[in-house]
Length: 193
Image (cartoon, rainbow, N blue to C red; front, side):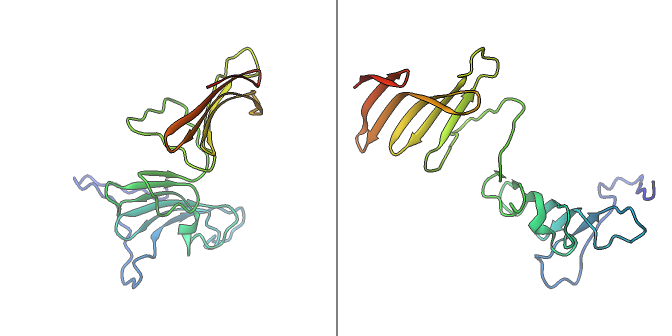
């Protein structure tokens, strides 16, 4: 190895990188990585790095085709651990540098296992949706959707491409609670209450 740090002492820390004399504690310090095919030093060709920012903030930054990763890396943060927050918070996604919750993800997520919650699962927006998709169905209409829109909760069916097929049940609400229930078969209203 070009660099091998080894000790037999009982200290946990093998190496320390510490910025001193810095008048701005919000300036991160860290290690950047880059590679080149020519003989240049690559000092302005850094595309990834590990950084620390004052008071327990740690992040990994990465970006292709940028020349300022070594001078302003925080804008390219992809994984941000904010130890300054009580209990710690983690931000995932470019620029999530102030995670609003314990885990704050900017963008979509795929979970390749079970997702268990011991509290509320909250979906917000002007028409929030919860979808369940059966992947081994023999037909093309395997997506079940619960949607809240304009004071009405809809149970919908979508095909395997996600295209809307039908609304199968609706519950309209007002300040007193449920105001009407509607059941549909083949998109035709059959039983309103």
